[in-house]
Length: 55
Ligand SMILES: [Zn+2]
Image (cartoon, rainbow, N blue to C red):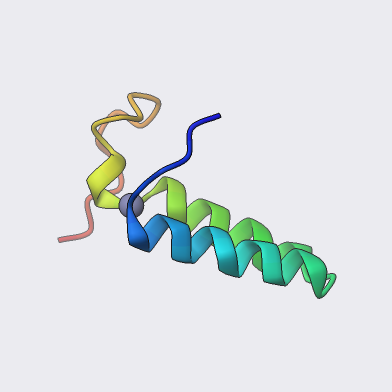
């Protein structure tokens, strides 16, 4: 398990859980994407060859 200590990611994860519990899976996916695209973690995720740097 990769339990991120980043507060922002934990926030997104919490929101994702809430969305899931609310049955809003599209929103849950949206929050997961946000967490994955978090700038602080792009260095940990080499899956994205520098394409999401929106200034
Ligand atoms: Zn983060």
